[in-house]
Length: 421
Ligand code: SF4
Image (tube, rainbow, N blue to C red; front, side):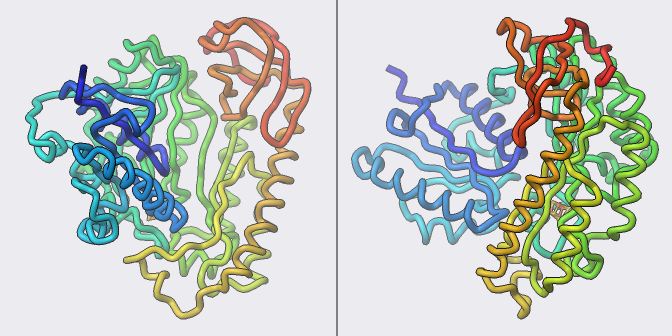
């Protein structure tokens, strides 16, 4: 019986999920087998996220359950990694003394040493499916006043184009038809190199040449990094999907300044207009925070009016949650929890109305659907042979709900079909 078995629990963003694939790849190369429940594994790994307090609490509550497993079987090893581990290494052992190993996001490749094993090479163990994540940039240089990412993942570090292209070809040869490029500020890719030719637009042009890839996506965008060149490149490249996730965070300029977000409401609106003029069917989604320190009712109203003005395709929302190490966490003008919760409810309703409006405009249109998603990232349901999910097909949209679009198959074409045609 294989005693080297592992179970990994992943909390948080796509970057964390991509990290878990890396960790799994390392463990497979060391001869471990993955288990689907913690009860069956000899190594339990909690890949944490510290963006919000709720996520941190969830991580510790899982660790509490694993403590019981370790009590029954003291040979079990428990490891904690990810953002919380990076940020508060020593404190983890105090709060959860049953944890054996703590390693941060920058320490993943050191895992074999921490397990007293040695390893020379490995490949990320990607989850089965049609779409694969490909991290192209680590960390962030923006230091928004509410965010822990620059402290947990460090300063921006782009990967070399040759390494990314090599990995993309491997992904294609493994049967994935879609690649999503990942980065906290993905369109600032290459800014940390001294070569102006290394940028996201040029990388997309190279990736577009890989035959077996039908579609290419990228997240997350920063409003200050989206250049005209990038917009027109995305418009012109057949495989790059017309979809941007552009966190706005607040619709009020004063709040944006205090968040240290280097753009204004007016600049954001102009950016959206430019993207939509270039690609009328583009999907634009965003993130908003309700109740940032000092936010007044009037300033919050500006966020609501901005959502009305833009009509987003989806938005992630959260009540402001103070994070250790960040400047805003210690500001005196924190908004009381009940006000934050009330604003979040209003914000969520506004987002639902916005999404409904955006979905309704697709009824009667025809969209290219691959792996259940339109090019603009809308979820599309349709009846048909299961295998149809494995290639782009055209679907005529008949109905729209808040969650998805429902349609009927229109024709079977390759990725060259244009949405809305
Ligand atoms: S740009 Fe994004 S990742 Fe970077 S500090 Fe701001 S919120 Fe965090």
